[in-house]
Image (cartoon, rainbow, N blue to C red; front, top):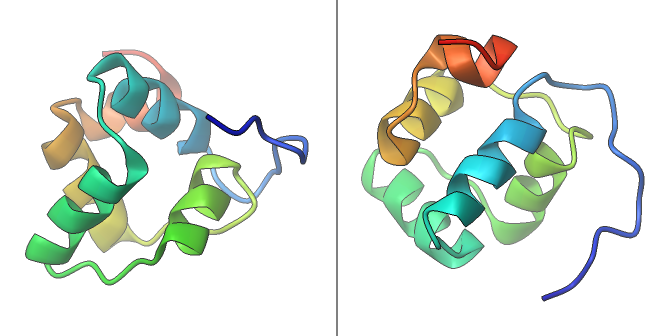
Length: 82
């Protein structure tokens, strides 16, 4: 597993929580990307890495798909609160 070489950015609120939820479920980035593709969200590995690193903006479509795939609420992704 590679460690993040850049500090977290400020382009989104959800990146760190997406990464935490994904890892807590034992899900690899490739698995998350495949599930996003099934839901019509076209994101590559670099894009997901940038999203998790908060150096890329997140669309509303991506936000909804991520909450569904990771089984968490949109509110939790945005605020960390249920």
